[in-house]
Image (cartoon, rainbow, N blue to C red; front, side, top):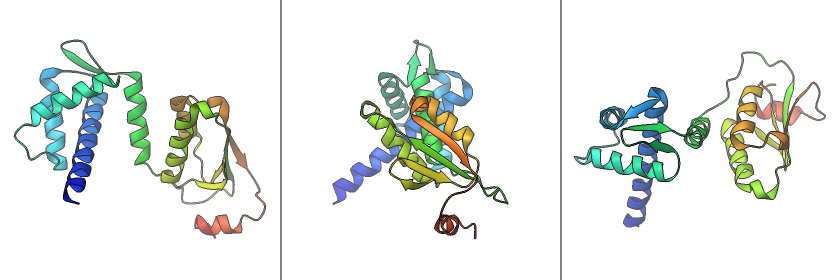
Length: 188
């Protein structure tokens, strides 16, 4: 059991390191190799992720893996975030994101309906995971509901996942038998 836990912890640390590297480069735009290590090390130290002496080696290795995955571009001097890297970073940020709730409900439901083809199954699966994490509830198989405005986030997801024509966002004034939904969302 110990080896399995160690492997899981290493994977989590590696993902956190990649996340910090992408965020650091996203904030700065373009970073030189000399600047990446201190900035990332500082961020990791604040998070308490790296108590190890081989920090620069880990960062360099992780950045190289991000380049191989197409998330970063490296021209020999500078790292730069690719559009694929930006998209992944937005998904990671959305995964930790909870939609803001206004003080008062406007008594309108936001309904998301999608029919995403099998060839885009990964996007469909990722979308449902993100919906759950954000507090959007499943009404039926491909029908999701939320009581507050989330149009901006949905538009961003349509673009990032490339599913604009497969996802429909509606604002509904009235929903039959919505008492259980109002209770679930604490709107009673």
